[in-house]
Length: 257
Image (cartoon, rainbow, N blue to C red; front, side, top):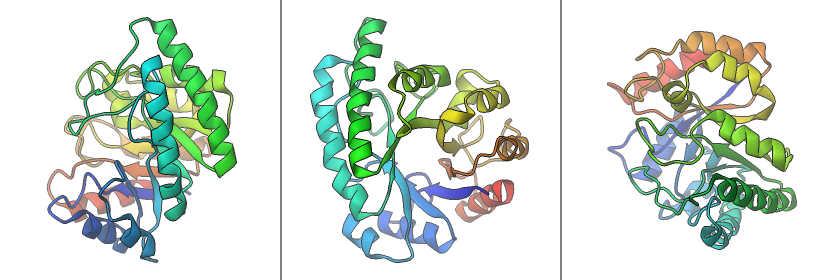
C-alpha cells in the first residue's frame, strides 16, 4: 500500500503556509514541501496532527561544480537539525540551488566528466552523513524541455548512473512522473527498469502540471504498475490543482488508494 503526501507549495496557495500544512493534514495526507526557511518550523513540529514526510535537504551551492560543493555540504548539514525537529527521515535533493521560478541558479561545470566526478564525490560524503543521522536522500531528475533548462540531470538514467556508482541505500531516486513524461516518456519501462532505485515518487499530469486525470498520463495504469513491482513507499502530489484544491486531493486519493 502506498503512503500519500501533498506538496504544500502547490496547493491551497491562497492560504498562509502554516494553514496549508494544517489543511493537508486535516485531509488525511502526509505533508511535503520545498524550502524550509521562513516556514514556521516550530509550529509545524508542535502540531501532533501534522506529519512531514519529506522536504528539501539543502539550502545553497551545488554538487556539479567544484566551486559549489563547500556551500552545498554546508546547506545539507544546516538542514539536518530541521529534519530531526520534524522527525522527517527523507530529504529531497537536486543538483543545486534553484531560484523561486525553479530555474537553475547554480554553477554547472562545462565538462561532463567534471560534473559527474564532482557529483559522485559529493554524494559519497552525503551518504556518510545520511548513515550517521539515519536519513535518506532522494535525487530528482527535472525536465529541461519545458520547466528547467540547463538542469544537469534531465533523464532518470542520469540520476541512476550516479546512484549506481555511489552504491548507498541512503541515496535513492526521486522519480518524478511529470518530468519523466516530458523529458523521455516510456514511463512504465522506466518504473520497471529502475524499480530498485526508487525512494520517493512525485506525480502531476501533462500538460499543465495539474492533478492526475487532467492530462495524457494514464495514472490508473501507473498505479497498477507500481503495485506490480511492489512499491510501498510515498507518492507525493506535486501538482497545481486545475480547478479546486479539494477536488484535486480527492482525485489523487482515488487514483492511488
